[in-house]
Length: 163
Image 1 (cartoon, rainbow, N blue to C red):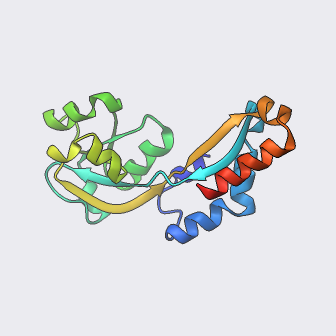
Image 2: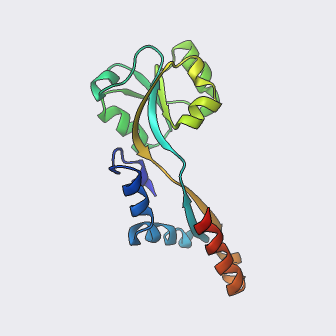
């Protein structure tokens, strides 16, 4: 699933959904079975973009010297570093204060998270670059899936396809 963290891997939203609905996307859903999970469907979790305190990010060069909050993952750290910024892992619950106190100059997330966390109060510039699109995944216990009658399984599949 880390493939979704690679920046700019999708050309647009149509390309994103074509991949998720392709053999590749379905193979990723099946790939969770060794962990005793059944991947049922993907949901659009929104694309991540940069938001910052003092200036907008129009090109990767604008990230130079900026401390950008990232998830504590190798891919997220490397992405910001390769784009010229200083990747700074900060816990989500501490991000508002970190932005406020200048511990970081910005962050990256989807528009609903930016709004609901009220980060717009401090980070005035939201640069809609949509550099990553990581879907949410509906999962269920593989044991429950295997012990469910076929009619229940088909019901789950229909439910997932209509969402």
